[in-house]
Length: 93
Image (cartoon, rainbow, N blue to C red; front, side, top):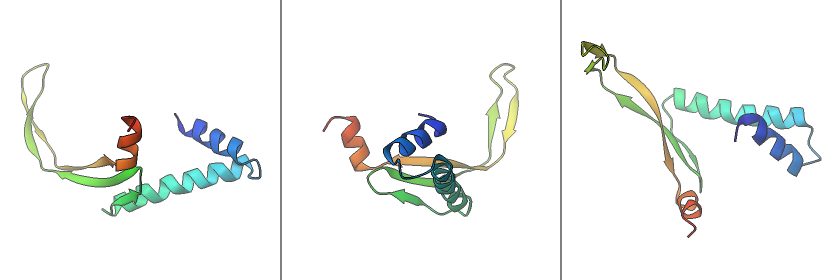
C-alpha cells in the first residue's frame, strides 16, 4: 500500500472528513515519526511496532565489482521491530 492508497482508504472509511484533511493528518503523522527519529527518539505504536535508529560504525568494505577496498562512513539507519499483535496477525494466530 502506498501513501495515496492509505489516504484514500481512510477518507472512504470516514466520509465526514475531507480528503485534504486526511492527507494533512497522514502527512503530520509521518512527519512527526521522522522528526522523532531524527532526534534519536524511539517511536512506538502499540500493537504495530516500534521505529528506532541504530548507529553503524564506519568500516572497511569491498567494491564487489572491482574487489577494491573502500571506506564506509559511520551512519544512522532506521530500524523497525514488529509488535506482538502484528506478528500474530501475520501468522494467523
